[in-house]
Structures are given as structure tokens and as C-alpha cells.
Length: 178
Image (cartoon, rainbow, N blue to C red):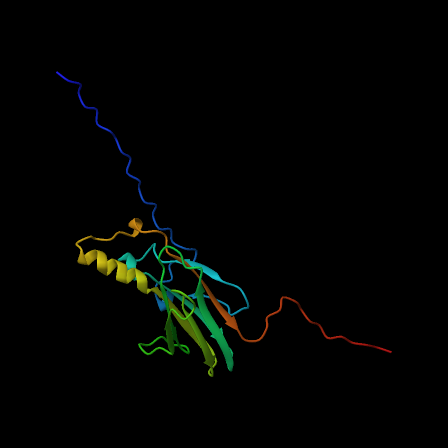
């Protein structure tokens, strides 16, 4: 009688769950988080967390506009297969009609809208991950049910820039007396 085979245990890595970003929940216009149009300030977001199904997670921000002004809305630093699409709505209402939409004008899979605002008001910007929906559809077509934890964290940065320069200084009137 020969030796008894000893089974080899191979560890199976457990994927890390996708962590929701600091702005969640922000999946609807009613939950939109404020972003202030500035020079160089970005918000870091991720597609995951509270959405079900996970591939439909979208992020909404809102910002006030004092027209006339031209603003540039951009996604950048995409990771984990993120492929953003920006859609601009307003002023003061979100309808099925959008003012502008972009997919991939920001370089690579990033998005960018440059828009000349002629009306003051509150505007809404939706960011969704078009690449994730395509990936999920391909997986389902092969009979695989995708899970949020089975893919890498999908992150992006969002900025709304332009308009008059902002200052953190206070200017007081200067009075000169003889």
C-alpha cells in the first residue's frame, strides 16, 4: 500500500468590498451634494456602496451659478475601470431634458463639459459610469451574476472650475486722512 495523498489547501482571496465615498448617499437629484465652482478644488468619488444593482450607482452634485459665466466640469484620475459620463441639468429643476452631456472629452475615459451659463440658478450634474454597465451586461450574457466586491474600486475626481477668481482674503475700505 502506497502513501496516502495529503490534500493541498489553496487559499482563496476574498475581494475587498467597495467602500462608499464621503459624499454617499448622492444617488438622486434630491441627494445631490454641493460642489463649489473653484480653481483647482476636486471632490473624490467612487462608484459603489449603496447602489443596488451596483452597476447603476451614479453620483449627483449641485452648484449655484451667477450668470453670465462659463464653467468647466471635468472628471479625472479614473481608476478601477471607471468610465464616466457627465450630464448637466437646470436651472433649478431636473427634467428628462438635459443641457449638456459628455462621455470621454476629458481625455481617455474621463468626461468634460464646458458650458456657458446664461441664466443664474441652481444646476445639477449627474456622473455615471458607462463602462461599468457594459461590463455587467457582458458578464450577465455569459451567465455570470456580477457582484460589487468582485471588481476593483472604481474611483474618480470631479471638479467644476471657472468664473470670477475666488479669494480667501477680506478687503476693507482704505481711508486716507490728511
